[in-house]
Amino acid sequence: MTNSSWFYSSLDLPDGLFQLFYSESGLTALHFPGEKKIFHTPALARALPEDSRIVLLLKRYFEGEKTDFGELSLDWSGYGEFCRKVWQAAREIPWGTTLSYGEVAALIGKPQASRAVGRALGMNPLPVIVPCHRVVGKTGDLTGFALGLPWKIKLLQLEGIKCIK
Image (cartoon, rainbow, N blue to C red; front, side):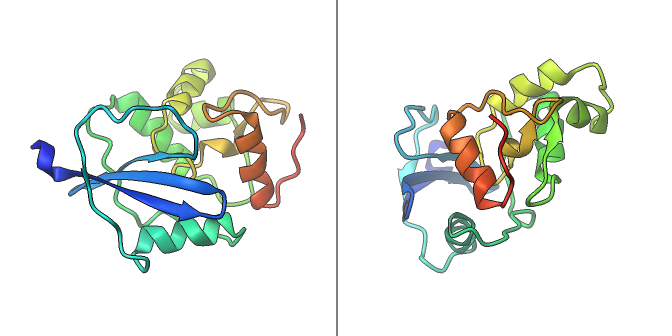
């Protein structure tokens, strides 16, 4: 893929300025306000129309409206098979519900791999779209989240999930 096939757009949502990175194959990354990640592939700025599917879905989500990102194409090129399996399993966790790391590990056929599942979720480039915030500790406790526990709590509360801290 050439450098000119990677794009980004800034989305000004009620919770701040988000950056969405995408290729011709699909979404590649979503950066939250204040996030210090660097997108490692040169990308060209290209504004997304206000009525584009992803913009509408993200706006609905952050307004607390039940949202399904399942129809969106994602570009996970450059990531290993294990991460892709974990992220796909996380994508299938329904709105307003949680699973434990062990349950996600079992879903992908690796019941002893809960720690590896946690590491893969920590590398998730598309939080919210791949709802890794819906994965919690075995007893329902909130454990790590790459964007910090305040964001995890906020995202779970948007979905009506009572948080244990």
